[in-house]
Image (cartoon, rainbow, N blue to C red; front, top):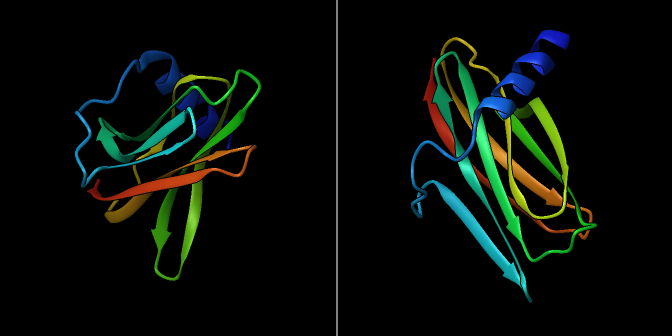
Length: 123
């Protein structure tokens, strides 16, 4: 568990923006009043899988959770979770499991806003 968390922290420290521009197939966006937020389908970065989210105008005190999950036949398994407060980009990453899997990024706020996007990735 510690190795996954440490790897995710390294990814978060090194990453600045998503590797590819979002397209309708790889991103989900939403707006509620002045609050805009989006999540981007995870992507492989070397031996890791990284998912991105962004949120703007939702309030400096709004707490967010971004989760990376991998689909395991009948359920979604949490691979990594990251927490952030306020506006900005946020990412989450974990090691890429051998095989072909559908991963998803979920962005949730303390105000009840949730959005997700997924992608099939081969490692």
